[in-house]
Structures are given as C-alpha cells and as structure tokens.
Amino acid sequence: MFLFDFNWQIQGWLNQFFWPINILLIALLVILAYLAYKKPAYAVGLTIILLPTYLFRSKVWFPVPSGVEGLPFTYLELCIWITFLVPLIKSLLLKSCQLQIKSYPLRWPILLILIASIIAVLISPTKTAAAGLWKAYFIEPVLFYLVLTNTLIDPKNKKVILWSLGISTLVISGLAILQRFTGFGIAEASWMAPAHRRVTSIFTSPNAVGLYLGPIVVIYLGWLLTEIKNSKAVILKLITIALAGLAILFTVSQGTWLGLLAAIIFLAFFGWNKKLTSLIVIILILACLIIPLTRHQFINLATFKDTSGQNRLILNQMSWQYLTTNPVHFIFGAGILGFAQIQNQLRDPLVMEPLLYPHNILLNFWLELGLLGLIAFIWLIIKFFKKGFTQLKNASGLDHFLILGIMAAMVTIIIHGLIDVPYFKNDLAVLFWLIISLL
Image (cartoon, rainbow, N blue to C red):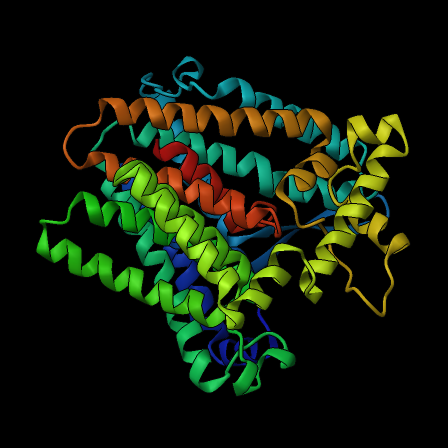
C-alpha cells in the first residue's frame, strides 16, 4: 500500500480516504500499463499528469543477513518504469525496437552526467540514501527522456505532452489558490498568517510551487502565441496560465518572479523586437532606481542584503570554501547528499536551517556530481540552446513562439536556480528532462 507524504493537514484529510485512494492508484497503474502497450504517447501524458505523485510512497521488503530491509520507492517511479518497460518489451518481442542511441543528439553530455552521478554515489557519505536519490534524480528521469524523445518523433504527440503538462498544474494551482483564502494545508505556521501568507500547495515550501509551475507557465505562453487563432484552445491555455500565475503570485517567491521576468524578456527579445525590449528593460531598471518606494527594495535584492539573500551568500561561501580547500573536493565535489554534512559542520543553527543543497544551480551540480557533472550540465544547456536557435531559423509561421517558450522555460529554471534548487527533486528532475526533450 502507498503512504502519503504531505503536511499534517492535507495528510489528515487524505487519511480519511486511505483505501479508496490506494485502490485508485492501483487502478491507474493498470490503465497506465494498458496505455503503454496500446497508446504509448497517452501513457507518457498520464505519467506527466502524475508527476506530483512522488509524494505517495511505499517499500518493497526483502530479507538481509541482519533481518528484513525495505527498499523505498514512489508512485511516480512505478509510472516511469511502466511507461519505459512496457513499450520496450513490446518492441523487443515484435523485433521493432526504436530506441537507437545514435538518434539522440545530446547523448554525450547525458552520458557524462550519468557517469558523474555514479561516481557521486560511490563517494557519498550516505551511500544507501544517495543510491535512492541517484535512481530518482538521474536514472529514471533520463529513461523518461528516452521515452519522450521516442514519442515526439511523431509531431502529433507533442500536443498530448503539452496538454498533460497543463493538466498536471490544475490540482497544484487550485490548492494554492484555496490556501491563499483559507490557510488550509500550508506547510509552515509562519506562512499561515493572512497578512504574510505564502501558499505551498501540496509541497513543503512556496518556492517548490514556483519551481514547478514557472516553466510550465512560460511554455504555455509560447504555445498560446503559436496558436492564437484557435479560440477554444486559447481559452483553455489562458485558464491554465491564469490559475498557475495566481498560484505563483500567492507564493511570494521572489526567485520565481525573477525567473518569469527573465523568461518574458527572453521571449520579447527574440520573438518581438530586440531594440524595443532592451529599451523597456533599461527604463524599468531606471524607474526602480529612481522611485523611492522601489529603490530600497531593488537595491536590497540586487545586493543580497535581505535575510534570504544573506543566507544565500553564506551557502555560497560554505560551498566555495569546501571546494577550494582540497583538490579532491574541487574535482569530485561532496557526492550526492554530501552538502548536508558540510553545512551542518559550518552553519550557525540560530541563523540558518539545515539544507540539503547550496541553492545555486551551478554549485548544486558541482557539489553533488563533481566537476565532471558540472561541465556535463553546462555542455547540455549550451547544446539545448544551440539546438533551439537552429530550430528557430527553420521554423515556419508562428511555430517559433513555441520553440521560444520551451527555451524560455529553461531560462526560468536557470535564473531561478541561481538562488534555489530547480533540479534535485523527483518531479523537477523529470520536468527538466521533459523540457530538454521538447526541442
């Protein structure tokens, strides 16, 4: 059976329906397996809709010399394995396997990331836990990427993927909006007060909501501009953007807002008018500096003088200190889950809470996967944007807005990732590789 890993209020409500929910989850797995056999694209779509189900967890128990041990797994992991294995077994039986490594242009940086992740498990101070995260953050998302890339060979399947992304936001956005007016299910008491309320939806922090919804909003914005003449589709996309946008607004997550702003500037610069976009950005910056009401806040944010900014600087200093004190650390990092021990040794418990990652996308990869992992990640991002700009040159009609939207979604991840953790989480890791596959 699956247990629920939510905050106490949502958990208490869900526990009332423990058996019906478990029966539904099992039924969905059966449906998913059927779709994976008959309609693989719809199986992929259903798995995308179910991305937040990593919060449903279970264990497989097996005997060991010291007794019995449980191997943890999430519902999302089951979905990914079914989506990957059923079509693969079917194609092998029919001798029509289509998963050819040569057809994946990003195979070399992906291979380097996987190699670096294996090394990261071997040097991790907590190898068992690291192996579980390695499986959930690298192996399964990359397997899903392979399935997605194979699915998207047929251009018609792209809409299935995009609509599934929109559907996956509905529960998250809806609950977040409900929380704004009721306070129900907000993860921390400090975020519940109406005057300072920050929504968390099904997650444990407001930032987690923004990290998930932000890239999807940007993709939908590009898709909306691509099919602006389709009135029915426009309405559905606007509803998705509006609900997710409200949820993001209610998170009060400055990192998400910054990421979305960067994405909109990217869209306007490459999809509208470069000179006019640059002029507007300069005018807005000058206005923020001139107007007294915004100048103080703008300078505080830009110079990291607020509490959150100061904590980010401390995390960066801790990370850099660790990486530069020893050549081995510089090359291999700390291993998966290694930063938690580094921070616990250096942090002031009265100033900063314990964290798993340094909250900077480059330092996150460097400390978790070593220098090889960081280089591979940068290489992957460069190839992603190079591929995107190449497609823009060959795009016809309004298709370039969708391409720009997908690229802008990655901009959102990178900019938000400068002060947060946009990859090392079950759903976010899969979402990252989904965006990679869409180009």
